[in-house]
Amino acid sequence: MIAYTIRRLLLAIPVMFGILVVTFTLSRLIPGDPCKAMLGEKATAEVCERFRAQYGLDKPIPVQLGIYMGNVLKGDFGMSIRFSRPVTIILIERLPTTIELGLTSLMIAVLVGIPAGILSAIKRNSIIDVITMVGANIGVSMPVYWLGLILAYVFALLLKDTPFWLPPTGRLSAGVVSIPFYQVWGWEFPKESLRYHIVEFISNLYILNSLITRDWAVLKDAVQHLILPSVALSTIPLAIIARMTRSSMLEVLKQDYIRAARA
View 1: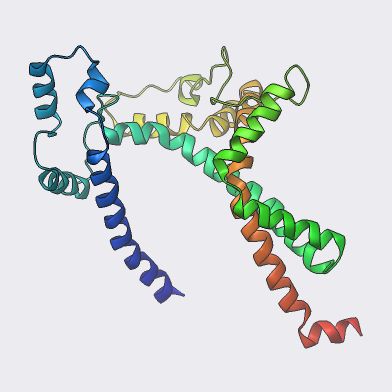
View 2 (view 1 turned 120 degrees about the horizontal axis):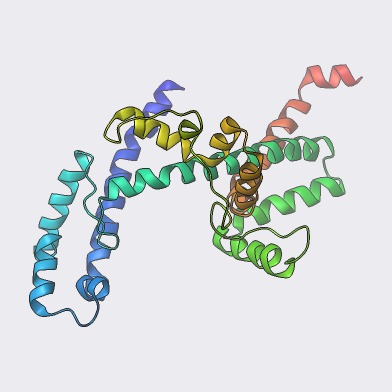
């Protein structure tokens, strides 16, 4: 198992390298002028020249790629042309949202997928088995972005003004504020210190922060905002888990000791 994991990790290195090369090259080859896109059509030639020099866009693509790869190895993903901020800082700011969404989706997939697979195996060839496996096949093949749009249309528009309404976007409703737990507890840290960045990161996990501060209104609102995207993202892993669980259960049910216990 350890050797297999190591091999998979080693194989991931060239795959990631290839993805970086392809995405970087395509981003430079797509039509359009980044300067005009960011500064507007009225940007002068002199302004655009300084803009390209600032972001290294005046160099050949292979040179840009070499500089970018060297910076990536040092943990520097460069400056965002759109936001004019370091990409690393933007990623760190968005990481709590990604963690919440990923963990919630995984929890839904496990809590629903495993029981569904077990039930499908126990009720093999029954209507329950057929419905479960058809649903699993649909879940594997359904595009997540399409399902997300359908869920948003149904729960945010069709069910508007009903108890089943759910917010389609954002993390919190307008007017709902998640107060960081360290501020509630009266903690103060210099903004340049590591402790500040750690507690700020934790406080941006709204569900965890609201549990720590016992702010149930914020907790309810944050969970409501997570439901639709989490359900959409959980469909593929849920379907895979259900199918794998069913297959494993069927193998176990065929074992001699199971047959002897049933006899």
